[in-house]
Image 1: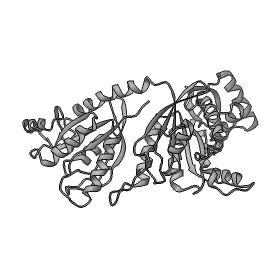
Image 2: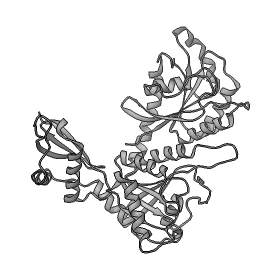
Image 3: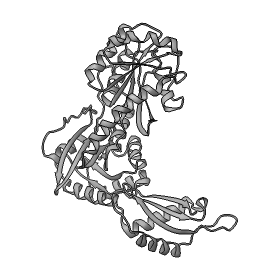
Image 4: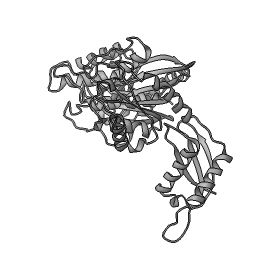
Length: 437
């Protein structure tokens, strides 16, 4: 299911971080009375009315030139680009300021749904002071107290109301979603263009030329796909964004929307620490994965080069041992023909269903070949029955006598046996042990 993103935006010292912490239920953002303390965007997950959403806390935006102010403004503008819904926060203990008006103008240009929150309204009598905020032109102001949680429910009801339309729009699209994730300048946009055979996405040697995620429809072998190219990072003088933080957020949002994730590596540069972090997000999300080594044309090769690179991948991405690897060149289109057959095969694996009778035959054979473990008192794990409960990824429930007896190593053994019997190429497998009643 699509996970919307909400950005908390406003000038400094209006209580954005306090609201952020209140919504996510923990003290993640730094809270201090000094304006401008929050310099970087913070990301977390919130939940309201059975809706799960990403929440972004931003630095303040001001007209005057204060230290870090240009950077903070850019942080907030990027958060606005990321957001599906924007929560603008103002200070109910002060009059409307020039900075409030400045922020409101920025938000109006975004054409995104905006919910106006008047913070620091700590008692009922103070609600009479909120009506001047109508002049911001953002609709009805919602009085809240971030410190005490008062009135926050009404504001979040309004936010969640915008989610329904977003989810409906996403559900109407039945194409297979394929996202391309990776560090800036690994060639994600070049790969999309090479697949499409035309210059649909801006390509440059400057890391991060792509600012926004780009969705492009594509048909292969009669199947409809949507290619999701994720943004990198652009440096502009002294105004800059943390490359790692930005690319990881882009990857996270693209992964949530995807059926298949292409983890793009730069064949020239080899594997970097950030590659592993980004790939780990796809694995943890349970998405089907293909590892794509791009720029293979630029690598000096002998008969061992490809094998050595594969071994390096397997060593650095041990948790992705199920993911196939392919080597391509977006520049020359070399080996691009290998890509979509792999994508199709991996997608079929992610939606594969196994009959319970067949599954249990494999479980019986697996236990007979490698008996279940015992604990220190001699109690042995018994697997009574197994059934598949979902796909994307394939998820199996095993009914056992005691879930604590299901050690990680034996769960891993069962997973390997299922892969041996049924394939599941390119997709993670979830195995859940449940005590039989």
